Image 1: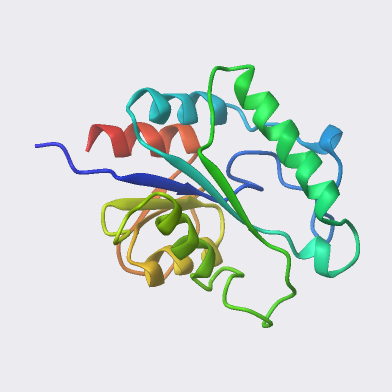
Image 2: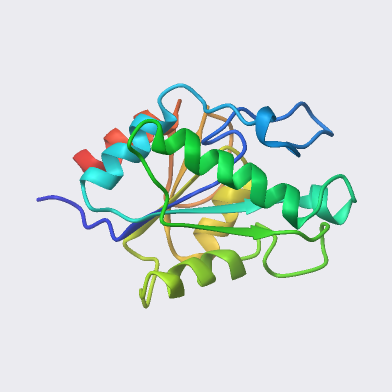
Length: 176
């Protein structure tokens, strides 16, 4: 019996694209580079009819390192890079705020709830949140989604799977 999968929520930096060094941010389109297998994993979800939504903290905006136009240009580049592989994301939600100032910044759940609403879902119970940090996993858990942590690590949360890459996580989810 195949497990129901209504949607996949993805973190961006460190999940889909190469993460900037600690303390730095992806602030320009030319800085965005896809991780190996990321486009292939998203394409597999597209072909399976599973919606894919990006939910990403973008603190660089709050810190003045970039603005909304810069982020839009980065996301335009993301769409272009994915399109080059015939892959697509169905939506992107971001939090521009600093830590501790809102409920949209993961591990808060507002971005995930907005994604759920945009997809017309009443629950995230049959969705999975895939990310590379404990805040991604905590947000997914709080929102009621299954979770997959990329690149291993110790996370004390229920319903957490671990996979080395987005492609491996997607293969496992689609095979379940």
